[in-house]
Amino acid sequence: MTLPKQSGFNFHDHAANPSAAGDLQRNGDNLKWADSTPTVRKLLDSGNHTGIIPINPDAMNALTGATKGASIGFFSAIDMDAGGETVQFNIMVPDDFASIVSAKLVYVANDNKAGTDGFDIYTNWGVLGGDYNAESDNLLDTDTGAKVVGYIYELDISDALTGLAAGDYLGIWITADNSGVDPVDISIIGFKFEYQITA
Image 1: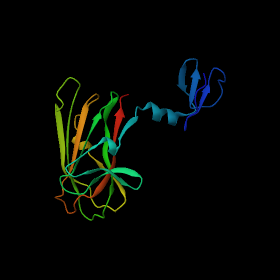
Image 2: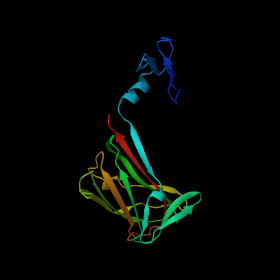
Image 3: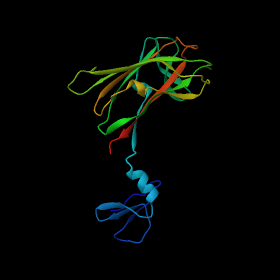
Image 4: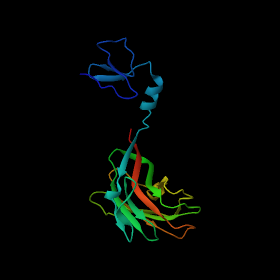
């Protein structure tokens, strides 16, 4: 068997060449860390691994005036530029989920903003065979701060996902709340759910 060479890692067949240097060594059917790479070994043995679930705007619902099928440059997008406009989408939480790292709405500012934009985020989730809204949470009057037109920004909504667990089916509802200094005027280009993987 020939082990692939991956970026940042070196592999060699320990049985064929015991003295060769490498990060990972194959000895029969087993892989082991070479003693020459304690820093890499310590990092990867620490269990600090994350997974990312990306969600494209095409997989989102656009409600109450939000415009699906829009674009900004070569990005597909959903336009949100008035109070009450909403995006809605679902996530199935993976079986290897341990905890949330971040849950971020990714968007482009369509206008310069000196003040605050507001979003109201509502969530509910449940397990297979149980109530869809067994758990719920929210995050209201979310302040995204000043923005520059054409720049990409992220809004972390992980505070609206308290108690999420592996295997949950999750629904997310994000509404523009234009009670802030400046009204929302953005193009949503995606959502990124990053999580800690179980050891």
